[in-house]
Length: 142
Image 1 (cartoon, rainbow, N blue to C red):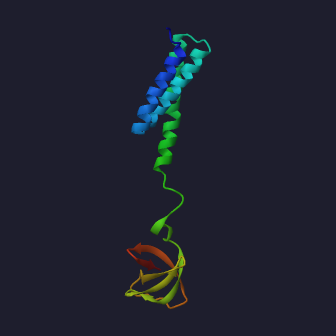
Image 2 (image 1 turned 180 degrees about the horizontal axis):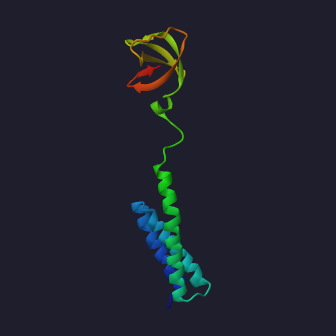
Image 3 (image 1 turned 180 degrees about the vertical axis):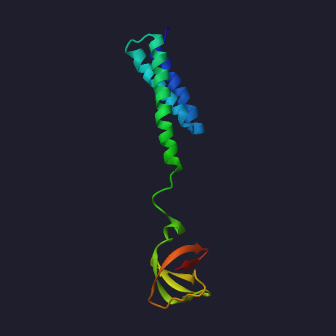
């Protein structure tokens, strides 16, 4: 029983896909796509040299183009801030006098303990302040 070349290329693509899932190395996925392209070439009647060239060209092109884009996206910070990062820079309303020793503010619909960034400054109830930092469960305001 003689197996067609395109079947071997698909077996190779599957063989590359398994370690891709296990190791999460995207380069293996790009090689698997190259093997699928070579399988299509074999199915369309391309000879062995053309199949290997298509495999190499598609794999190298994907690695050269997709990998830098993926690395750039991986290194970017998410645009949606969550947790305490989402509270920095927000405005709050003073509920109880805030000075260097403490006080209370209304921040994002919740009551927070707060203290002034500038030790010589005090904020009275009703004033609007900006949160510059979160220190544990205390908002540092300006």
